[in-house]
Image 1 (tube, rainbow, N blue to C red):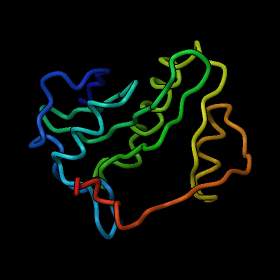
Image 2 (cartoon, rainbow, N blue to C red; image 1 turned 90 degrees about the horizontal axis):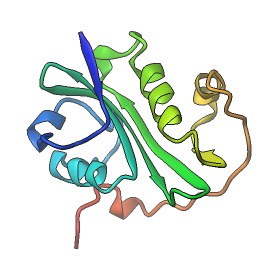
Image 3 (tube, helix red, strand yellow; image 1 turned 120 degrees about the vertical axis):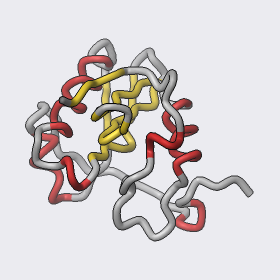
Length: 136
């Protein structure tokens, strides 16, 4: 059974191994991943026992705006509704805000439309040499 939690208290880097950041040429280490979650304004984790099998995080000013940078579910757990449940829960946590934004590839837009999100254009900048999140 999958359990959902909204805190990283007690979560260790060892619980974050297993295939997150699929396809990234230089993914964050589990230690960096944990730091990223700890520094988020809001987080929802999906746990199978002690293993984190999915997560979503948000960055927010907690006044008007939030940005959802990542939603990930481990490959072996996809197709079970975990991603949808993670989105439902994070959006519920952020419901007091005026704007909740995220950027995604066009093929993922239908998934997010299920949550009353709208297609919009945006701008991004990527420093791919910093993709792993390692500190210099």
